[in-house]
Length: 272
Image (cartoon, rainbow, N blue to C red; front, side, top):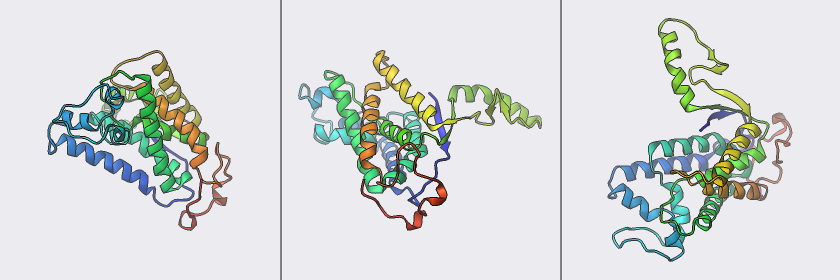
């Protein structure tokens, strides 16, 4: 999968994207807490807070020793649990790169509501797509899919730098050998060393990413990734972004030059 590493869309209204940072921190803390086994067996703990379609539809019940919230609340709690360090890391990287700009365009409180709404919608979409599944669904991917869709609507002309991890790992020994020999290797195959990153417009990077989610979902690609939850998050993001954004922040990067934008320390929260 292609991963973003940064974008050049400026923050126009907020000095600090506090909600986005808090969401990232909360996900990391919960992951570390669960993996430390302080709360018990990680798989058992996660199962109690995960979305399980058959449980939500009343067709099955969790074992008595599994502790968790009422089934309906798992549509929210599942967003804060992750199955592995790679699962957590990839989700948080997407949230770090794109979430700050979406929070800036919406305001912190509205961004939090937007994020949770996209996450819940992705869960609902998933359970209706797989109503008889007993496989637990966890992760922030659905909410983050909504954030990516929002970024596409808000900043399609921004520049996004990304990497393709397998290719980066394959080229790393070449760069390391050149560096050890004293050779300055700036790029390989047009990709910038040492991460071998590339740049693309926001509409191309996020648009292709969304297209891949749709293809994987509708060709029935299985595995550990709940593609239909991604589709639900994307749909929610596209629908909700115009409702949650600040009134004066236009869609499709039509907000005027940065020089004419209000400084972060002077800007207040707008109603959507």
